[in-house]
Length: 232
Image 1 (cartoon, rainbow, N blue to C red):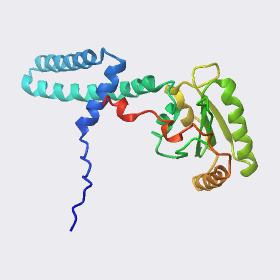
Image 2 (image 1 turned 90 degrees about the vertical axis):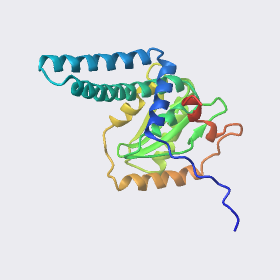
Image 3 (image 1 turned 90 degrees about the horizontal axis):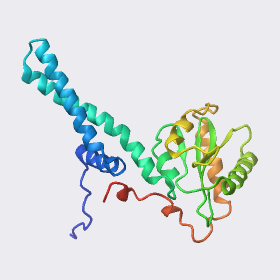
Image 4 (image 1 turned 135 degrees about the vertical axis):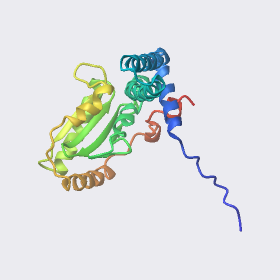
């Protein structure tokens, strides 16, 4: 019997994820180690102070302080790592997909751009209870016609479904990458849960008959390198 040449991938442990988060954060914020150490020192010092004031066992309070310090550092790191990630991928092709792909509940997200140009202007589509959302990457002067074109296509296929156009970027009227997820979550819910997949299927059929992506634009490369983001 031939041996299976494929080797199973090693399961990642929680500390591997923490190490990745630390590397990403420290790359954007070099003061990260000092912040984490400072938080730990302050929390442990407060625990010792409580032990002294209450005449309790100091060792017990030190252990409690260390656990509390670890929890506090994890909370701070989880907050900073997302900001650092957005900062590092901001302006790169596919940065919008890196953000919207993290939204797991309530949205059906296109894995490939619905529109892409030779100038690397890209439009992504999401379907959720707020309706159909198109999010663009690129200068407003170039992506505005692309977004309006997609809205016209949707209006011809599905009526009475809101179509929301969002430009990601730093120009006037555009939404910064760090605020994109929050902007999506703030949209008013209109469709029912049952209507969302039905609308998505109609749009998938529409996209399959639409004009192909221009040659020279690889939608699979229109995404940030996640291994590079982890510092590998």
